[in-house]
Image 1 (cartoon, rainbow, N blue to C red):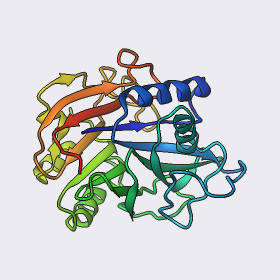
Image 2 (cartoon, one colour):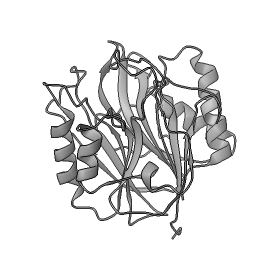
Image 3 (cartoon, rainbow, N blue to C red):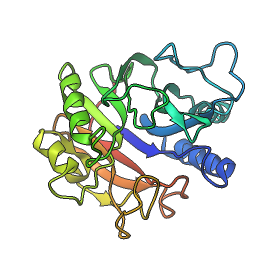
Image 4 (cartoon, one colour):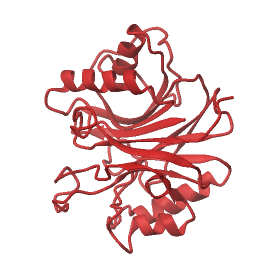
Length: 277
């Protein structure tokens, strides 16, 4: 079982068309069963896609897919080249005054059910601190839930990570097998903050569980929201599980060594032992 997460920083990236192609090429080669994506953008003024969209599962009545939606374009290219993904996308907030910024999940197996949750204090589309989570349950893995997450910062007085994490844990109690995948904005290297809070909540970091590790840093320098980031880099893109799973392999992807850089974040991909139904 192979799952992956990436903060795409889509449409905003320089040379975006090439990076979209690089992203799709890697997905075709690796074929992760589940892909969690964050900062999945579309231009708010772009034309709405009309008619039914193959593979798309709507998770909210507010989700309108526009022609340059990043996950829509990626899924269409993959389909036309022989790799079919099912997917869902949730708009979260207005980004850079012109984008619908959202989160998404892609699955090689049909999506049976979705779950949308707001962990932040804010639930205002015009507030850039609004945070939402989207999860899926799939035909191939009906007993597992896979969530794409993008949390706020530990030291944000208006909407701190700690509150968002507590609300998320409460929400996840109704599920037995859960994966949280995404941009946690909590450096694994920082003590006494969000990462330690997650560990003490009895969740398991796939990096720690992994029998083999290839890379660790997922942000190599300063990016939006991290102007004071450690120049040595941070591991803020993570994959956590409720149960202590057998993770056979952990690798950083899209870092320039393991596939080209496609975002201001690198991705994470893991293999864990699970039988397909």
